[in-house]
Image (cartoon, rainbow, N blue to C red):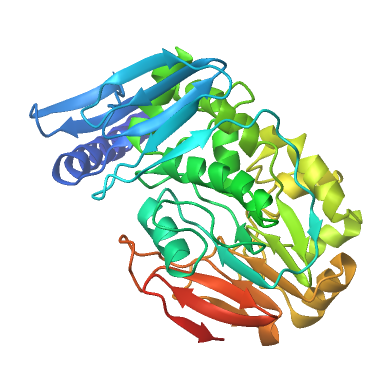
Length: 403
């Protein structure tokens, strides 16, 4: 009995220490213990009080939208007004950007969505960007400096190709504006025999799944109001579903494409994928019918679709750039087998942050994920520019240097 009492005292002491530590950390740091829907333990600096199991609230902050569901349009103004109106087929909508320049551009909704091919001949010119994450200034600024669009955000790249290797959503303040610009440029490029390739990354597909962990609060609140559901996962899933114009468009995009000798994806291709003998077309088909499996950490590796959407799948795999706790960096012979199977000479990807556009394995891999700058003319913003078969690093100031 004494032993049990002593054990209980020690347990109570440990629990007390843990609780006091949690309270102190929450009070004197910016941290909080929370889920997407509730604050388990936090401290409200404005009210000067602790929060215990409170419903988490989100606010509309800054210009956002438009969101289009059927014939209804929803948008948020700079001062936080939530507006709704009807739209007719062929109407022009104006997208207003929440930036210092108060940029804006018109869009017209596409009548039909055609799933893009996944193989293309090599164009004379191609600009590749990755991981913009709702940063409109970096995205538009780089394209303007290198002749892809003009100052009115119109396509000026002719028959050139713009390749976007995923993660253009989350974290930033202009997610909807970035998406609508891509949407607009797709049809404009086609009219000039050009192409825009939007290859989805893990963050796009996380939102399909309802995972809003990297979303700004204003997007969560807009999703709640539009969907009529306060549960964050349900609201986010609705906004990125087939019921919305942007959701339907995003879900029709690919996760891997081959352009000339280059194979593009967001994260990478693990050599373990080869045992499934799945083609590029197979991968895209399986991804589009298994969006709900994104992020599985322990997939059933007996099924190709589980592997593709798992931790070593094309959205998440980092082994082209580095080793992780779960797997080593790919070896040269393994990379050669991947390239041989998919008929490419080089793999181009994002997802794993580097200081600059990075070549590895003698140029057989190219990592395009960099920490982009915040302005339109920032040297930190970088892309890969390929012209007449020659590869260059370009930046937001207009620099163009051969790799």
